[in-house]
Length: 215
Image (cartoon, rainbow, N blue to C red):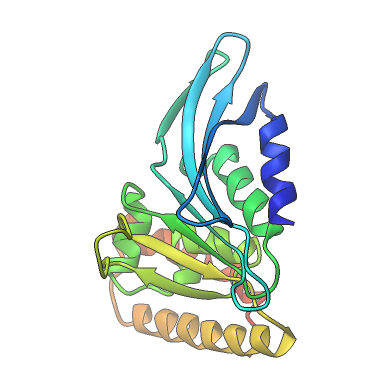
């Protein structure tokens, strides 16, 4: 499924009067890995958007994964300026790649320039209530890891890892854990005077996630 997703990008996918298309592809560190530069283009524009490092998997030992990084925060295409974060473009990119991942596969999304996500993760908020984590959860990820501190030389900037559940039992376990985290967060904020935008936006996401977070 991941190979199909990258093939579709190579052909180009229309979005809001522009086309999301692979502009450059290079070999990765090993046979199953590929580096992809994705652009937004129209008749008058051809603008860099994002880079993806794609690993197609090595069955049965290694599941596929995708890393999204070097995100262009502001794109001008077809005479319109798009702020990437919270845009239809971001939603499309996340949905396109996450939907292509098989059970147990992972996606890593850089959040270095995503100020709201970085702040909320730094404050210890439940991942599913952060700006980026909420989107990843909505598209099918149920287990998360915050790579807030790179452990070596090649990991790049901070990124949020999301994983699709391997099977129904894993999903139930992940959901129970997320539910407990959200409930504890809500109870904690009841004792505090919530006045900052980051807390308010996190609280605003509670209702939308609770329909899926069954204890």
